[in-house]
Image (cartoon, rainbow, N blue to C red; front, top):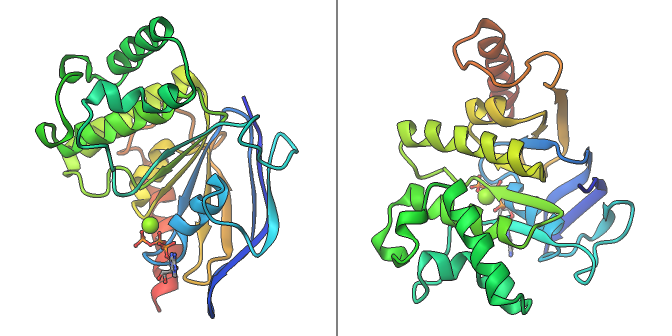
Length: 248
Ligand SMILES: Nc1ncnc2c1ncn2[C@@H]1O[C@H](COP(=O)(O)OP(=O)(O)OP(=O)(O)O)[C@@H](O)[C@H]1O
Ligand SMILES: [Mg+2]
């Protein structure tokens, strides 16, 4: 299990400042929920954490070292839930292992376990256009887990999924997080989802995003959480207020 440190990260695109001095730590095996208004820089933050984008200043550390593709593996579930259309669900899940040259036997065992874990085993031979949005989200999650990542990054994976399915998938993410214990950064603008899943919540301001609040939920709201409990509803309300302030 890895510790992820984000230390004073800033990032601009041309003259547009998007991230401003962002710092927080994801302790090993913990799920950090990042909340922020639309367009504030959440995806940019994940892209910097994944190494796809480079920070202008500040640094990202995995176990106190600069990220190194030979040493560290990062699983990424993108906001767009993109899968390769010409590959089946199983072939998509195994893509990362294939390019790493993992042998067929261990790959197929892993695929079996992961597809079972995300409830997609019976759809393993389907192509992306033959599965639902919720199934795509699960396939992307299984693909990210297949490489046995040190850090798992999830970018609003359920944004376009109906509320009922979303509840179900949130429960699955919780189970999978408890099973695989990956250090995870889960980005969303859905407050309820974050309060349900996160050990620690980071609230970002509007762009340029700074950390407005860091809230440790692990002691005040032990898991599993009921979305109807008074404590849950109070925390949800406080976080909604914090985000609404960003629109005024
Ligand atoms: N590659 C890029 N080049 C130029 N500007 C970019 C690039 N990527 C993001 N931006 C800008 O950075 C800002 C933040 O975008 P980002 O996608 O990180 O926001 P977000 O919080 O993820 O939004 P949403 O909630 O809608 O997903 C936006 O103003 C966007 O136009
Ligand atoms: Mg985004």
